[in-house]
Image (tube, rainbow, N blue to C red; front, top):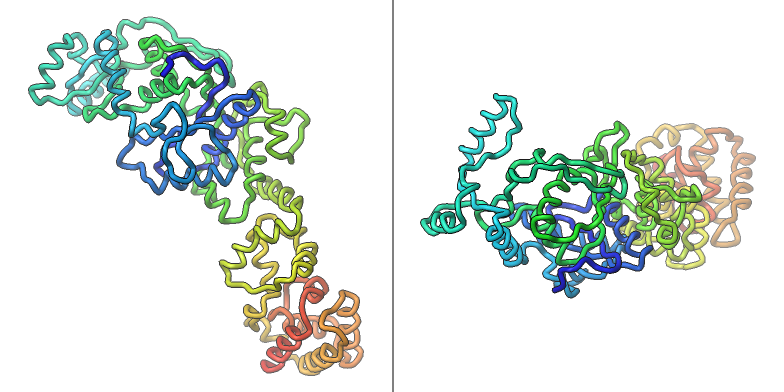
Length: 493
């Protein structure tokens, strides 16, 4: 495996499979994907699963499925179906790369850049308390930093447990790099003390495996969330000690909620899987999240991924936090949803009907007609459930709120006349004009008007006195269905 940095763009998204894919993680993946596509490069999916206690196969499956749903397809990494490695730079799961980390840790131990430390947790805590009391930085001051490697190995052989620490005391300088989003960033080396590379069980810590993996996977650019900015100092130290070329870094702004706090699940759905279940479209999710920290050069708000790739430029990434506006997000989704052909939209809303066990006509012409009516009222796919529910005969019930209207003196005459006029209608379906004409005939024959006319008829159609406009619904219903509902309502009078 070559240790040279790649001559062409290689970026990675490296989730930890300890939970769901958050919209912040999806945005990081998207920016990396767009940068790779724009520059004819490669997008790698690496799995950072060294937290054995919290990493699960179920979470890995969920994260991979969410990325597939978003169409953020990677060139190398775990296979989206089998989760096996695909590509020349594997393994792509850190839990399977321990021998690689051990090799590089041993090289650093041999070179004197790292050492075995045998301090106990209690000793470290006592040091920390003493340093804080004295007003000093609570860095570890290990009495083992000057032990020879031979002495440390003897100590290990005797059954003592030790971590491998990076040695920092000789690094008296500032570490400076140009962040692709934030400009020049400067870290004094004494910001950190001697930090752990390998735990006593041989498992690497984040900063160490991140550097080794990015180097061996020939990563050229690292785009990640701004909370990783403090990690960059430790990583630069490791790059330097290993004589690895440094990739370029870009730290992306946080996504904030309406209170300008870091976005969290407490304020509503932030998991991609949950957004999918609620009926957001993948294209709309990408459209919305790309704008949380990036702006389209033409000021557009609605566009597709091809447009994103064409116009993506890291100079347009914003360093300040972006607010996740759920109202705006729904509007973006509505724009994408309404742009879909009716046949495609019908297929997308089928799982929502199935979930509610709704039975609707299978006639494509009826489906097309119904979507022409309801599409303007839909923001997310799940909205179809309540829009179509009145058309599902099996869910027709007389609601408690209809009780008052069913007790009015004129109601029986209204419903009886309504049913008779429906039965006399020459065809099985009705136009809007035909419905309005029948309603006028009921009024003329019974003398009922206003709410005494409209509410009983609405009860006979949707089971309650308030709700969807009947002139919209009735052209989508059959004479047989309307008569059966009228009989159910009459039986309650």
